[in-house]
Length: 103
Image (cartoon, rainbow, N blue to C red):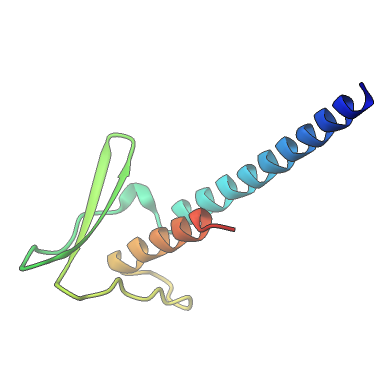
């Protein structure tokens, strides 16, 4: 009986730890989406041969950044007062990658 109670307590602690991490991740994501102004993100770019397409879907809305073949997402300038559209896409993508990477 004691072993079962100890196992239940350990399981409860792991669940609480996972919930805490999930709450922290949601807060980080919300901060990034606000910083990169997700709701005002616009589709940009023109399709060519073998385009690099980044699509972000949120709710019923969808926005797409189309880059030329072999073109990478632009770097985010941390000192810029205002970010270009492509940099905003990059910021959101990097945040999602950071949150979903295996830890």
